[in-house]
Image 1 (cartoon, rainbow, N blue to C red):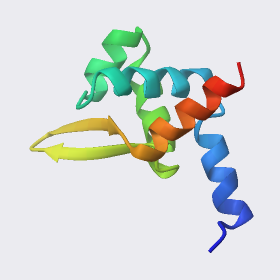
Image 2 (image 1 turned 180 degrees about the vertical axis):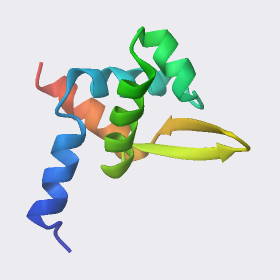
Image 3 (image 1 turned 135 degrees about the vertical axis):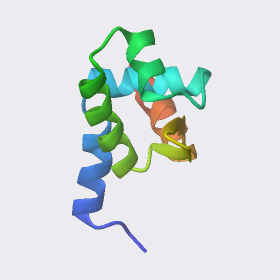
Image 4 (image 1 turned 90 degrees about the vertical axis):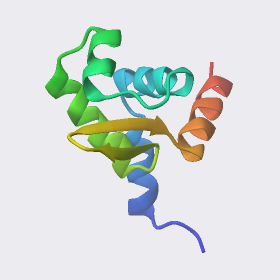
Length: 90
């Protein structure tokens, strides 16, 4: 079954920002990071990272794993695939 245009739009918007691409690259080499970890490593405001992670998760590029009060994030197969695709555009 083909994805609806709305679903495809959400996927494209998921990586339509340099910071989100940077987050995916970071999670590719450093799985299981918390928002604090991502924020520190990229030197970006926590709330900004949180919003980007929400969009990445909605697009299916990031999985969240709840560990008590902590949430760990890792890139999905779809996220890895989109990174490979983006590199073909360079």
